[in-house]
Length: 282
Ligand SMILES: N[C@H](CCC[C@H](N)C(=O)O)C(=O)O
Image (cartoon, rainbow, N blue to C red; front, side, top):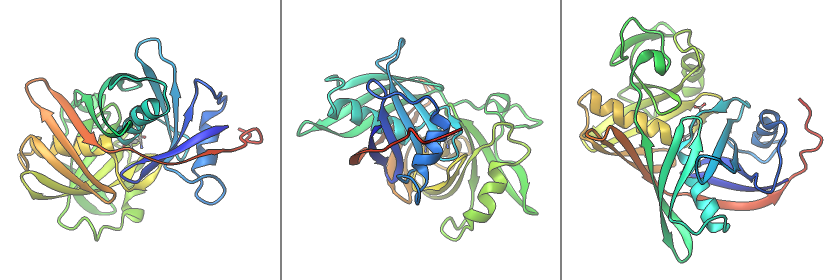
């Protein structure tokens, strides 16, 4: 199977052009290619498929083989792939995802995509739709206990579920310890992506993320959007936010009038390769 290794700010996936390749067991293939010792090494697998309702379809799997509804860093890389590898010559494209159809603007320099602006759509705040089990309709600054410690979370869905937690010291967090406790907490029926955030000023935040199905990643596009929406809702930032992640910065804007979130950031090709997946069982 031919693949292309790409990343968005270090959030790396194995991309497969399924106009040419066929994957019958994507969950097992995702687990295999994601293994950083016995496979290629990635945060998951992203398949680029034909679509009946958009220019392309993005089908995304986490490193544990679970399917994610949406992937912000991933969809920017899909845009770069389809333009740089000649599947389209358009600089405005649409991509079907389980989180709805997304619309992207591609910036091209010397014939290659260097930056992508994504209309990430409407953030969902209703607890039932994120989903988060709560007594309230929306989860804003709501207590949650993990490991005997009380945190305050704000729930946002960007097609996939997020819990945003504000802390004073992001760098010092033992994410390996508390990340899985949030991910698998009983209040999250579909598990959750958890972002830990420190606000630097009204235009800038720094964050780390423990992703559902992949663990800590260097960046999370949907997570950065959830953080910006949460920070605006909690009156901690203005509506345009620079989100500083371990892998770099994303520019996020929540247009409150349109109620749509816009994410702008880079996409990078690392290498092309071929791997035998015929022996993968499951
Ligand atoms: N890294 C992705 C998010 C993956 C989300 C996935 N972990 C899930 O929702 O299961 C991003 O850039 O938005």
